[in-house]
Length: 169
Image 1 (cartoon, one colour):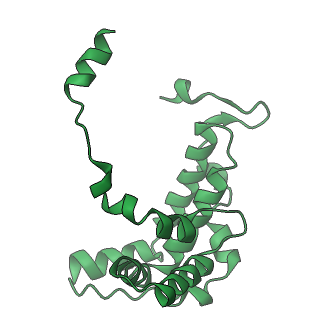
Image 2 (tube, rainbow, N blue to C red):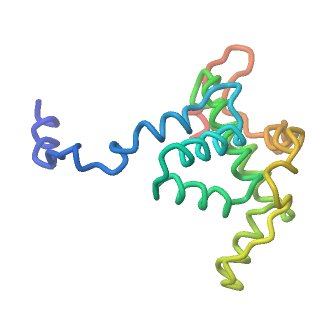
């Protein structure tokens, strides 16, 4: 196979025993495995529990990173990952992600606040709305997945579940 031979010339053997992520796989799996009934608060609680039993920099750094991020973006992204597992085609997934992206790009969204804090003011201190994860209702999260009406991206036939993605490209 000609393609396989060419690809093999670029293949490097990697010593997985030195992989930082592989060495933390148990922490990652226990905290981040996506389940339908798992929420962002559950991930944070799991990380805090891991930290209390076995303190380590990886868990501390992960929690610090989560708490710096937009609560809305975190919850909507997790919900998007859960919903993506239920889609039956790439077209359905792209339609869902388009809805998310359109809502993230609204003027009042945290996206613009993050851009302001990091790129414009360089304060690196965004003012998220809401500030706390606990203040974010499921209705707000669900709103990121609502039909966009006339602005909806349609790549699949909802009745057939078939993709007409090729004809759109």
